[in-house]
Length: 625
Image (tube, rainbow, N blue to C red; front, side, top):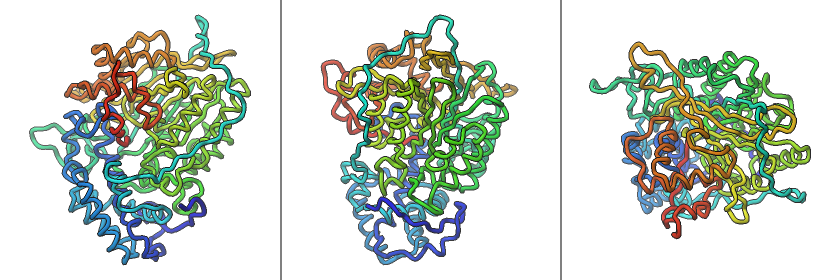
């Protein structure tokens, strides 16, 4: 595969690039590599239609989705998801043969659009817009990658249909410095200062949200202009948001930010991305930059001098999930986005952080004495980031850079917080396993890890690599601000050991706040953000250290009532109507133990004296929002 020197090119005008005229002279031998642009449509729509749903558990197969979501996915269930493996290989082989004769990108896109419509993958307007938006980038990616029909169908339908080995194994280098003896942090002294850290994630502002429109339209995103009116027997979208496949109007985000007073005061804010809505089939660079600047300005307006430390989400770019590594130059690069972020966030970040933000979308800084904050660009670990098909080995050198930051912090005696969007357990296997290894090495200084992306309220426990039994760290996955899908809007507040000499900077507790949409949308009502729960009080935790979260999983395994409390809070107080049965419960608990991707051994103790069900390792985590 080509690892370096991808040349710049012209782009799609709706994406803010130059016209395609100079880009249509292609090598006819591209063959299937061009046609796999169709795969991008599937990835994009699965990311935005069905598989973003906060389903019962990450490891459940499709048939395990709660009934509440079945009605949301008809176009996928009737389309590509019914495609058999032999048919898939025939289709891609035939298209491969035919398109070897056709170098024009627009004509290739037309073929894929027809395929999308014939297979009923999505509504015709979505097929048209999505393919035209994605086709240029996808062709450029597959020009520098290797893919055959079997691998394409393996990616699309699963490993039983084809071998998928584009993402090869690799390892980062750890310093030769011996690992210090593991030492759990000492609890803070009574009366020691406690800091409150506001955590915002997955705001997903929809500038086309419209009250009264159809919340159950045929498009991947509803409650908006173009969704049409609901049937006379069903209510339309609520004023503040809706329990459906809908994102938020700006007024709800303003309400959240203006109503933070009772949850504060805050020392700082962690904001882990996903600003734009889920209308991923029709977004332009102009749309994404408008979302970035509008929401950033709102946060500045309502939070004033409180420092805000952002991370890059997977929806910030267009096409969605498109984050080329820095060796991609020209119009295909992400410089248009990183430069805009650096400009918008300059009041919050020092120059050293802005430098690496402009280069790769990640940075490090010291928000207070003794604490180093590291913001990772988790799109470089994402399977949905199709640019990693060119080279998935430590994109941008980010993990090796992380090791350097952690070693320097250890040498100084600092503690570290890590923030990011996609949780490590949802990453590509090699990236995830390398990150897991880094966490285990630097367990003594890692005081907190904070992620979003899944839209639901959960966590991931890390274990020592030798035995996979001793909890060494925990990553907190906070719930989304958006309602997508069928959720209350929400946000998180972390209680952290405060700013004083000798602070451990560890998380002491956390609280979740929600807006109950049923109440807020009632006639004559006003929005009232309320505390849903506090973690230690609700789960009777002695502390918020890794061992307590490990123990909570096994307590929930044995206590049905405790698990149902978790299930209710997991969905921000609006769970599916269908109960979470035994397979769902097992998969949900397994997910809390799985900070490392594709590692079923982490769940081996969930079923006493038995092997983890043979099907469990084959249940793949669907891509999230």
